[in-house]
Image (cartoon, helix red, strand yellow):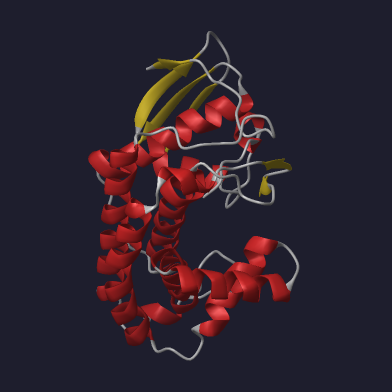
Length: 255
């Protein structure tokens, strides 16, 4: 398909979600379900495998995803985590994930999996019920994306980023245990397409993109420009900063 990128995420135009909210909330529910299924299928040895996120094994990564789901599911829990992260100091997202991991360090893998199964539907429901008045508010601090900073609405975080975070960590865990992630065009393909169009809007240059695999597709932005041919998951991993990037791929997209 052909698209014309636009620039958003500045102080005058905070970044918002570009997909319809019913689609985004359906994606959130499906992604939580798939992550739950992934945890349920892990055996004891898999929980201790190292992921490509430095210092995190599978259990640690799952603890972070659980912590983020609990933050989304409960306002008191969210406030508690945010306060702890503020006291921790440093880069805020690193402080927040550190708090989430540390607070769940004493949980066994089975406890993490069991707790996620309970919390995930609550998180999906709470996100779905977040009113527009709240979602339209700007986050109080700029968010780091690659080498730059952006202003986001709370809705962009709640509706888009919280799903991408679970999706990318589901891929991380699948890679850690050497198992192919569960991918379908009607879910993962929609998520990847949204990433592609947002990435193109961020760099605003013409290009042709062909992504392979169940979540892939083709996109044309403008006239001319380079041709990018990658596996869909690999494309997202590059844009997340997990793999080396060159050319237009140096423009990151948040996950």
